[in-house]
Length: 188
Image (cartoon, rainbow, N blue to C red):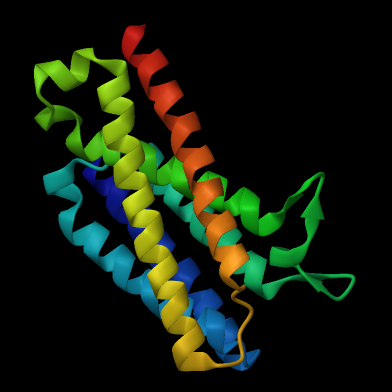
């Protein structure tokens, strides 16, 4: 499993670097900034992978998340940035927030599951609450990173206060969905 993880992390870095270079040449400073942030996050995750026992499926989901995020800021359909594109009743951005917090919640569970007390493991509500709070905390940190993009870059596609609040709400949806799946899987 260690070799698979290493291969996936190398692939993830390659993908992020490719999108970062594309962002540089496309003069997309916002996604150049995100590319640098994602490289740092990936290097931190790689460094801690053995300690946290990050399974292959989590790394795969993170790769998918990073690709979807970078596509959201790089691809235009009918002159509409993918992040602003409507899919059924949701903006692409909202779907990515649901998926992102879903992945973060699953990741959090995989990292902490061996260290949970018996009380939390047995109580679905307490486990869900803990995982949701962790996921929302990570989502809040991501919103701070987006805020720095607003301050540093001036001209970027990050939304306003309403967008920020909606991002947090959709993060909650993703965390809730993952928590339900985790608790159902535990009962099997």
